[in-house]
Figure 1 (cartoon, helix red, strand yellow):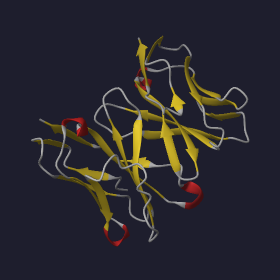
Figure 2 (cartoon, rainbow over the protein chains, first blue to last red):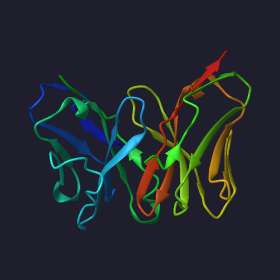
Figure 3 (cartoon, rainbow over the protein chains, first blue to last red):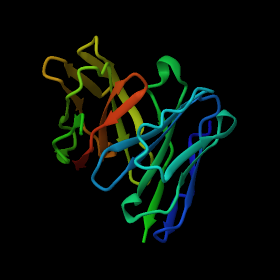
Length: 115
Length: 110
């Protein structure tokens, strides 16, 4: 079956511009996560959606970052007024939720470069 | 604050030999541990996991060991194969959140 997909795969933007990153989770997965991986670092948790519950936004690094999940499926991560330190690979993951929440399925990521 | 640490950024091993990857954590609230494998330009894929109530879990060539008193886990791959060359991430779970280590790049030499 189809896995988690993300678009675009690469994005180069100028400092100060806004960007939108998209994630299509696996059908039927109620939990969706966004992570960021900077060069030489592990995956950094950004935000978590579970069903219709309020999202856990505790990992968002600043108020320039926001995310939505429409209809319990597709999610968009928006970064406003991008800065060079936002350059990273942004990974989306989904899981069945409940006791299977830990086993997350990742998309290929979006590599964001801010010039 | 890195709660999960992989202190070896890289590991080189000969084909057929054992690969041992190590991971240390600091948060005693973690109750589930996972290893993920990542190839270039792909997302991480789940490899093997272990609950905090166990000390060993085996799946084919992969075995994960957990030492709770030392807050340490390890992944053993035996025998190592060329297709095992990848980046391996250790992850620890508290509720629904995973904390990841920085990864260890494994290179299996023919």
